[in-house]
Amino acid sequence: LHAGADAPTVVVYGHYDVQPVDPLPAWRSPPFEPVMVDGECRARGAIDDKGQTLYQIEAARGLLQSDGRLPVNLKFLIEGEEEVGSPNFEALLVERSAQLACDVVVVSDTGMIAPDVPSICVGMRGLVAFDVVLRTGVIDLHSGSWGGTVPNAAVVAAGIVTALHDADGRVTLPGFYDAVRPLNPAEERSLAAQPFDEELFKTQAGVRYLTGEAGRSPLERTGTRPTAEVVGLTSGYGGAGIKTIVPAVANLKVAFRLVADQQPADVTTAFEQFLREVVPPGVEVTVHREGAVAPALTPVDHPAVGALSRAIEAVWGTVPLFTREGGSGPEEALGRVLQSPVLFLGVGLPDDRIHAPNERMVMAQFWKGLLAAGELLIELGAR
Image 1 (spheres, rainbow, N blue to C red):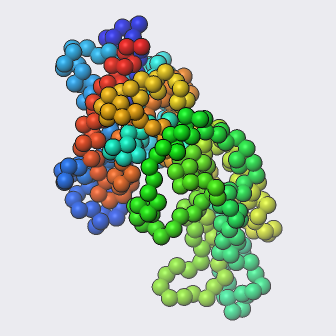
Image 2 (tube, rainbow, N blue to C red):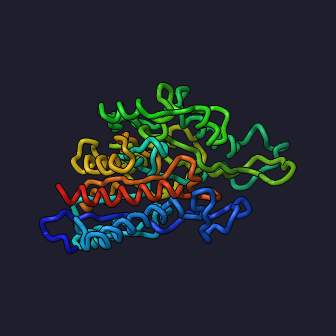
């Protein structure tokens, strides 16, 4: 904090926790022993988010070694619960708000379109998820003696899944899209300018066709539009062979990704209303709420975004495009509690195998990220 009271203060946020390494046999090297292969560092956390936090630290170290001082006051805030929804993070921000007071928050937990297409994420989707248990009877019943006469929990669950979207791929929760903020012209231009190869996209995903909201491109669906996904569905007998029963219990897990200005509490109310409308009478429904994260959005015309754009252009030699990312994190809480704009300086690439075996950091991206992080501190200190 040696830059002085007249200089801006920057909080750099990152996280050191990671996703589980399963399936371990798919790793070509021990996941927690980083190795260099073909210009990339492979390890769990290499890109999400240890490697990206590291170049922020090294940028500050480099400026201190070369100039003896930093152009801004700098604070690091690195947490260990991001991958489980940061359940204690907002309380920490409130408790330490004076200690963490700042003018700008910088997050490096995002990515870019391609190595030669630099981009700036300006928004992260929110998340609200539910674990739903459906009970149609006391016990599983013999399908020969009872089938065709008693309710089947698996069929009820399948009906809920079917009812969650209409024929155009839109989420059917009442009022689900009412609060969605449309893109501004600058974001629309950036979206139109982004290169997109649908065949490559399908190959990277390992699928043969795409689905989703009608009238919206895959880029819109994955970053700028809200979604509902069934992330788990279990009922009845799942072992080898067959067991002739009518299941009495089913479990359904649903995750909603939210965009500005949707609120988790409103979606929670809408989902519970949806269940009341689609679940047949006589079915016992238990809903467990599994965390909630509000969406984050930084206006593209904010002066701090201009500083980040200039920093990236200085390193990549190209004006960056604006994007939004489909993932979720505590960025909304950071901006709201600390009352500061959130800048996203991330260099991850679409095929970095985030959350998967053989996660990687492309080292050419790492070095550019390091330079851009330093350039950003210089830009912010000059304003």
